[in-house]
Structures are given as structure tokens and as C-alpha cells.
Image 1: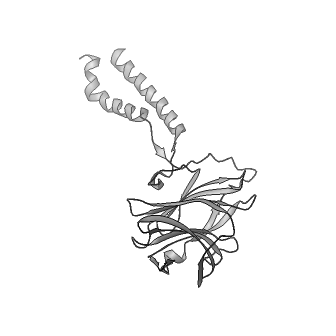
Image 2: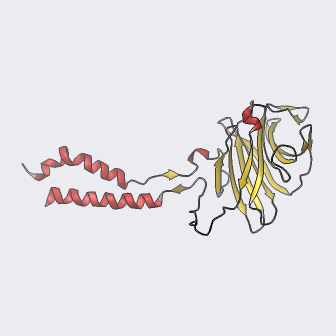
Image 3: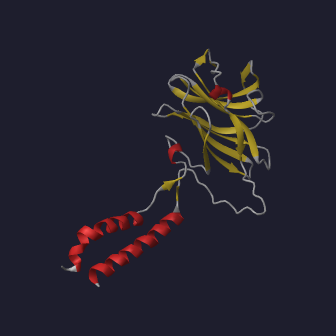
Length: 235
């Protein structure tokens, strides 16, 4: 029996394994958090712990600005979504909110200074905001885009996010007070703190391919297996 005739029964599985290892591995950070419109790219992304919400963001320490894309499904199709920063506390009261909803078929973004739970007033926020826009995705989610000025040398922010059922007389209707709604608060870390003994973390880019080191390792193993196949068949 010629050695070449052994290729099909014995070496085919090995050859397939080799091809699998050589094929690029698309290990994508935030692969489930891609924005439906894909308008912009952001340096970071996170899956917020409640309301099926996500936040993409880029912090620019040079000019103390934060660009965000907040995505969540509204409580109802005609509802609203909101993302806010609270400069003075950790809850809803005191929040400076960006709120998006559909108005006459078009998505709009309005700003609300929430001085208390009983006072939700549309108006200018305590910090500058710009590039406000929103869109409704085919997946039932809304996406709110915006940029805002943050305090110089800020390392973290108190963020609040929320969804509601609709708009009545131009005002957002109250959201539910379920556990998920009440738990929609947290810190947004803008700058990663490192201890003296901690290694510098690898940069994480939203909607970008990662796993380069893994692919290099796979290529090395793949070429090694190809060499072994060549040796068995032709030597």
C-alpha cells in the first residue's frame, strides 16, 4: 500500500483540523452590542445590567468631553429612552438627562433637568451638550447619540438610564417602578485606574476584531501540522 493512499482515511481529519486552525478567528469585543445604524465608532462599550440597555462611549481627556450612544428598547413602541449623568448624587433626582422619543414619525432628543422625582422639566442642562440625535432600529431598540462636557480630569461619572411607555401632551409619561427600573443606576468609569504592580491593560475597541495573539498561535500550530502531513505523505 502506498503511503499516499493513507491520506484520505487517516489524514483527512488532521488536514481539516489544520485548516480550522489556520482560518482567522473573529473574536469580536462587544459583538452583541453593535449599533443598528453603525454611524460612529466608539472606544468602549458595555452591556448595562438592566433594561436590556447598552452604552458605547468615547472619553476625550484632552477636551474633557464624552461621546455616547445609548441603546435600549422602550417600554412600548411609542415610548421613550433616556440616559443621564447625575453630577450631585447617585439616583434619578438631580440627573441631567437626554431623552429620545418619536415625534410625528421622526426621532427627537430633548434635555431634561430632573431636580426631583416630581419635577421633570425640559430645559438646559448644567453642562454643555451637542450632536444630539436618535434613531429607531428594526430590532425594536432606540439609539440615542450625543456628546457632553465633563469635569476636567474626571475619572468616573454617576449614570442613570431609563425607559418609559410614551409621551403625553409633550411630556414623558412615568416609567415603571419595577426592580429593573429602580436598579438602572451605576458608575461609568472613564479612566481605568492601575496599581503600581498592575500591568497596563490592552486597549478594548468597540465593534473591532480582537484575538490577534490567538490567531498567531493558531497559524503556528497549523503550519506545524501541514509540515507533518507533508512528511507522512511524501517522505
